[in-house]
Length: 437
Figure 1 (cartoon, rainbow, N blue to C red):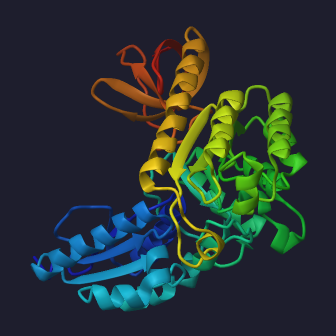
Figure 2 (cartoon, helix red, strand yellow; figure 1 turned 180 degrees about the vertical axis):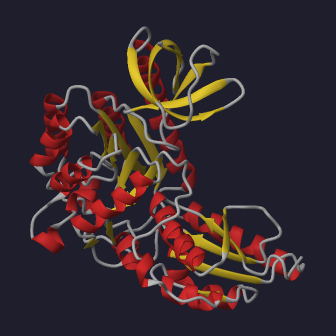
Figure 3 (tube, rainbow, N blue to C red; figure 1 turned 90 degrees about the horizontal axis):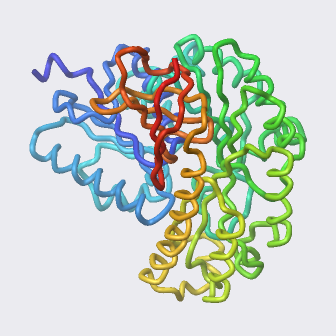
């Protein structure tokens, strides 16, 4: 058994979609070195395990540490031979982890792919630079357009972990998109720590709109979805590109984090309450059909009950189509941790997050109910026993709602198909539909 599977490697990916892309590049390199790679597998025949960790917030760090400990126990029990850890948690806490979990053979930072490959006994293959083996369903893939971040948000440790913003050149991203399309990808999910900053380092101006336009010219790509747009210094030409380009989904992931001027100032977000309302009004006026996804943070130092009241009113006023909330987690070394006292209890932070989501539940339910009887085009993600699982252009995989299509033998479909449906029923976070022949 051990001889048969000595070249099989299990890569376990934790955290965000940017980590997924990093793992996919690593899988391509390892596969090019004749290793057999499984991803996020419980297959006990893989004798080497590599864990790609997240170190962003407390819950993510705890998940990463628990996963490492579980595999460390598996190594002690003789179930695996070698255990390696890389990614954000290892980048930030390498020395501490090495001391606390000696069962791990080695730790690597977030950008040490060549060292990881050498540790496996392989060589970095220059000819595979830019190649990926995607781990998502084959009809969609994440496209990471930059690394790091130049923003100075007071609560965020990403610049400490990943470094300054580094844009990938447009031509390389287009080439990557062509390869993905050739492999069957029809939907690109554009990601970065800050996607609207894209191009400033390389081209001395924001180039995200031009990038989307170039990507839309790739044959086979039908949907392009933009994530993690920073609201301060929002580029006007991006609004026009989303409005006018039929391949760019009428969808924008734009984390606002808060609305109180006092909290925004402490967060060092570079935008005011008035400017935030104005930006949302402008986007919705220019793109009436757009779905806005935002992320909010409760319990940041300086968030009084009055400031939290402003945040609740903001959610009621703006009626976001998609919304997520995280309680504040103090991260050592950040501006907030060094300069402000974390005086709100974890219990109250979570209560505030739940209050926001309670408001959002009602908004989402009302918005979905208004869609009953409407027709829309959706992409098929998978086929299960009871339903065909699909998404509209207003929904990103894993984080947004689904369109659950009632099965019918008359209309055969496969994953990646675009089909027209009629919405026949709704609940707070899902739509139910029939396929239109």
